[in-house]
Image (cartoon, rainbow, N blue to C red):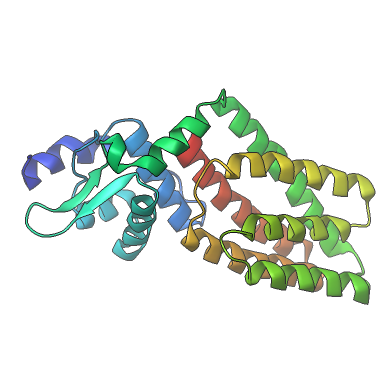
Length: 250
């Protein structure tokens, strides 16, 4: 097994090439960076990542954020965290030890291309940023506010099993608030396309927490009639999801 100094010299320099630009979604960005490191083979299967302190410094994140990201990737089968002497975070290398990771790889390999992922993400960004901006410009009725509040509350109370369905309902309610049937149809297509990608990656609890915070901010901006704030909150929300999808699928 390589000692700490050889691990540092071998891997730290290449890591600088995969550090992503910050989008404001630090946890999701960290997941994307770690997955890119693994998928590119910068740290090969069975090998150990640099120390927590060194890795956090290289990625420009706090050690707490790094631990959260590693914990989620461990649950998804991408890394193995070992305690004690000679321990650390290792890239999973044995198929028997990583069934969930290989299941994700198999589902992602069914003809899905990076260009398809990027096309969906760009489509979604154009559609959903425009929709939420227009929704915030409307004078919402009491019934519209009630429906939007109800969908928000349902998404906040959702479990990992039904989160994506209730998340979609909230986004569709935002489209309904525009009063434009064509935008509702566009949102439905956006959700269909993005859900096909989301179904290929694990549900991460930390990401759900971030999504809930962002949903609150989006709806609050719509209710207060602030299109710029609504657009900014939605952009942060979309960037977080995009970071995860690029990390797992591209």
